[in-house]
Length: 247
Image 1 (tube, one colour):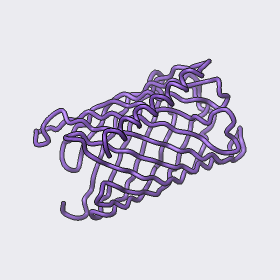
Image 2 (image 1 turned 135 degrees about the vertical axis):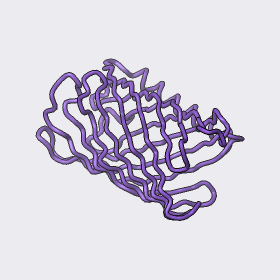
Image 3 (image 1 turned 90 degrees about the vertical axis):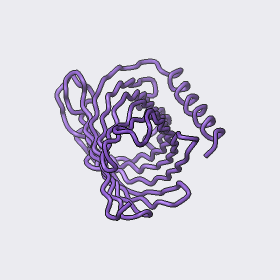
């Protein structure tokens, strides 16, 4: 990965976000907090099993918004900074998406995915790119029949060390931007799905335990094409790596 690649990614992501902002007509502001546990079971240098559990709740009312229960994916790691993964997610969406009202029902979704990750370094900066394809199978519920959506995701991320790696508590700044697009017979006005911009801090406690805490702005176009969510999110991620072979 070189500087031109990173610059192009930043320009493209900024352009997508700008297009979405220009089209907005009705934007609803919402605030959330997300708590996530991310486990890596590391078999050896070539194979890993990742498991994620994520609880997402409205900030003001503490009402549940979404569950990721769980996301599981297997990764094949290559020596050139490339890894590929396949997995699936069990996803639940509390309806309606309004923190001031009671939950009527949970929309349920089965979401297989495939991903390609490319990692690199620029001096002391650690960069990564991820291309991810999701097949989203929405199950029948009280309001809608079952349907299918294909979603394409691209994420660029940079980890900037703020202390020496040998410090008692190494701290890094984590910056990322991810854009998503929809495809399928149900998609008419919202081919652009959403953009997620994140900035936070990573604290490394041990080789096995670390935490990320930060702010995410989630800007999403709704199915109407003229309505948007602008979501402000405080996110905490607990990272846990389990090594089955000495490293």
